[in-house]
Length: 66
Image (cartoon, rainbow, N blue to C red; front, top):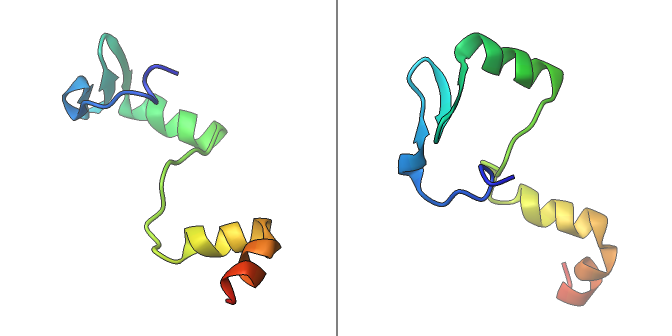
């Protein structure tokens, strides 16, 4: 959980895998982890987060007149 809350990019390393503080996993371990438990943070879409909020909370759409 502390890793997810880290605010300093310098805490992380990406040479050959993923490193955070004293914890490391190599590229193969990282690929296996992503295969078993797909996980991501963020969105590359500017509109998708708003559309998802409207989908989850339809009253938002009516309140905003969308």
